[in-house]
Length: 249
Image 1 (cartoon, rainbow, N blue to C red):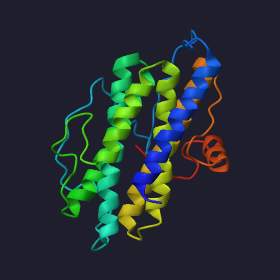
Image 2 (tube, one colour):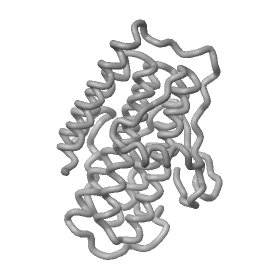
Image 3 (spheres, helix red, strand yellow):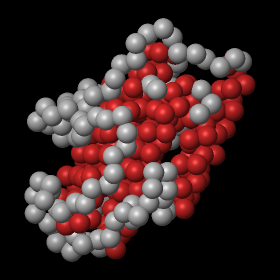
């Protein structure tokens, strides 16, 4: 199934789930009087992810951040996946930055900065392989991929309705990221791409745990996966960060 068809199914399923949730909930749920837990994420060397209140400008990568040399020429499919993943990570960053501006809930700010690190990792690969960056000339909330643009526009509206919906949006984004990374890893045998994608997977799993934990701790809601199958979701939630020894930031 191609990414565009998958995302359209995701949007439709998500919106239907939100309608059913709203019908059963009555009044909107307010956050419980608990201090929100700020998401922190560490890489394999113990460095805490960068945090700031605003989304920072894109930097120009020079390829120097790669942890190993290039693996050889890329296939067209590998190039397409890199371009898509660059903007998919941007979507996550931009949605979370927007939701933080709406709700001032620290987990969105924290994970937005982590997503910036994910974007930077993809940018290093694009630069090292001489591939033009699709996000270079786009502002926050703007995408060259029209499907991702539609998804961004849908999710910020949904996430603006309540804190519960905002956290559900975060969990959905991470579910989609994990599924896309699972598929992308099957389409490459390049060591440098596999290393970066595995790092992003570690981060997305960590983010999913953070959002679902906040739904439970703040609002008493047990999240049910929208995109991942139940077994895959349960395995992610049961894992503890760092168990598999992968770096992520």
